[in-house]
Image: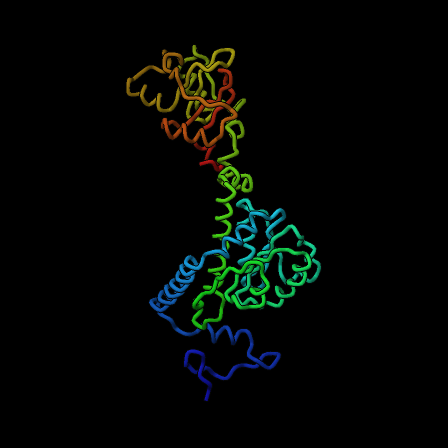
Length: 357
């Protein structure tokens, strides 16, 4: 008689693999063939989310002197905050280290298993070590204790066991104990790692506010992101210029102006004098209004139909300022001028391509 499976069903005797046990395929089949309805799947997901939400909610009431002490150590640190961990806690530690580094607290992640193979040299007396271990007994982290004591490097531990070896030897112990894991077997690190991640975020955000870290500071460490582009990208970086720039003389006919607009594809032409001083602008919107008046495109000149007092922007203004002007005045294109002379122009499509909008 076949033995009952994990959920009470009976499976045929396992096939023997090359080492005498079940093959990988047999294990995979046994784990994935149980029929499950949609309601059961959704119920399991909601249960996991509820457990993790309760785990995070439970952290707030426990914040106190230890968390403040951890913040003080990081703020006083003249070196870097070195985050370390092993296993799932190590994965969380990598994210915390990245968040700290991008929000004004210099730091990096040190893999605990690599520390004993030369990477201990990354830790100095001016650093602070932030270690993550739910059990507080991870051998790879316990191994670091004598080295940290020799250097007098402060140790902050995020742990679910405040009576553990690491907790007893830490400079500061932050309690991230959770009542249960979201895993139905209460084994896989789920709620505990979520709690660690949330506490790491709380630490990073608290340090950010204490340092007076601004959006501009954030953008400096994210030059490739949308915020970095909005903060640092200038009009001169995105504007069209030279042969791409549509321009017309004030005495040119409307028909000639329309030809220039068609060739350059910016939806407008800028009327300039021989010295490139901007006199006005003519746009697609102006053309639609002229059509309503049944105006002749061959008898009217550009100075007859242009908008004389058009909105302009300087080349060294932030591109984000151009977005605000276009939105505020409901226009789709902006000429770029300096000392009254035309330098370039851009439209909403240029801003979209640059990632500013």
